[in-house]
Image (cartoon, rainbow, N blue to C red):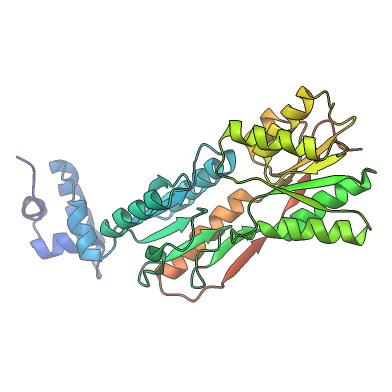
Length: 327
């Protein structure tokens, strides 16, 4: 028969109330009492009722993570760091891939709310979901605008755009295209486009942003980027909105006989460890993903504790030269 708390208390020679206080770490207890109860738990192989402890503490110890897809290197690495940071703080995680599907994301949110998670960290592209206005649930967004009450943790997208564009101009090229997502999607990533346009204007150069929806499949993106080369046959350089798209662009360029970096330069954005290893020739803007995860967890814990937080946390980026480099 599975041992009960009463059995632990009896073996330890204490009351059930005292055994419960030891289990839930409440109030002052002597080292002698703590040792007797823990020894009894070990001897009986007593496993506390997690649900009962959560009800007693009014906390679940669970954090929900909702991102577009962990198959993307950036989100995969980010979720990995988030899980590690949360585990160090005694939290477990529930992960949901929204796949840009509003109904799926809403369903995940309702399930997480029903499961009474202690908080959420989100990085999805869907907006206007009413469940995010649930006033009693602490939420932190990463690089996404959810609503005015949810703090955002992000890399310095504007400076990243400046670094990438200035690097290309310094190499001597003039026909530079920037690829980015839809302008109607509210995200700090749009500042990369604003920076690109400002730098190009400052240098007296034409600016053109080619819009590609993040939600497109690999083949659909290839089709779109082939159109880019058709529209801009004289393009000398491309500042891509992310490293995965940068790699797709490089593949298409090579299929069209464009050699990188001899007659086409490409700069990406994200700089995950995976992409730097499998595409070492790609110059890219590195987001401080580990620091973003730490900051997001710190901010969420403050929100859970009722501590006031800032509306936005912007972390510095760096430019990483690919193995071949950009002259």
